[in-house]
Length: 366
Image (cartoon, rainbow, N blue to C red; front, side, top):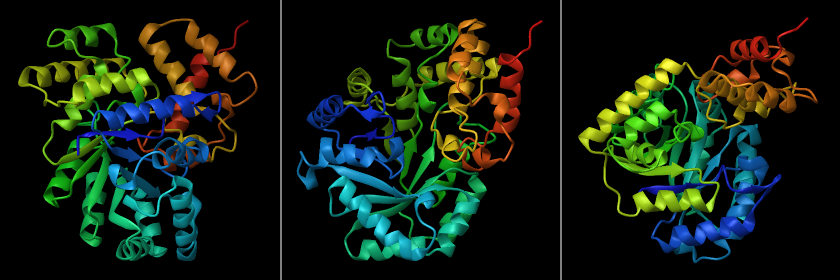
């Protein structure tokens, strides 16, 4: 396998529907260049990702020509008896009769106990024995200590998907480096998600761009993805490509992948220092936080406005905040129920951050 995977959480859209025509073109280019790994989940794009995979990939290519990963998400089952019907619906939605990889989705300490209690691991292993899953793994969002506990308790786990990028590498909350080291200790192949941190490592400040351009002429995405792919044991780096242009860029540097040089790693260290000085909200816009928000607050979009204000000190961010919340869902609407924080892979203190956003964008004027 080549190390670039097609993450199907941020497909190109036409308003609220997947742009099937452009996605087909992207799939064709991806396959044409020898890439064949695709990743989806039941809830991605409001349950539109799996049908898009069927329309653009599985109905158009022989089953043996691609590798397809899907996930078991706890939002969609409450008991062990509900897992198999959910799994079968995923096979049908994707148009396949087996998944190459099936991951327990968004695992943290609490979800791990939930998956054990509801027999999710056992069911996945049964499905593997029946040939409906080739490999069972986990998609992980917690500390390295929790990951070590899970891998110790469930040695049958074959692969681990972790968030890993150069900004989060030494993050005390995400613990990318430490989680990677646990994977290596247990000899588990690593799949990387969020290598460009939801696009944050593409939209770099000019100072950071200048640092990268001093050591090479690649795009910001090329440095981020190559960083993740340069580590031993990394099996796949997922990129949530949402346009044919993004795909062409990724193909250009991953077709004949070369790890980062020592000089490039040093440049990345300088970029991390620049990011640290900006004190941005490290949101990846995965939108897990918005699913259960009782006030329907567009949390990632509000955080994007706040980061724009911090980066550029511009009035436009305030204008966009006003347009974004003119029909409700202001930062001040938060009732502090905490549902968002329980589902946040970045472990952000969202309630406190929304208070800061309200203070910034909802200032009263005389």
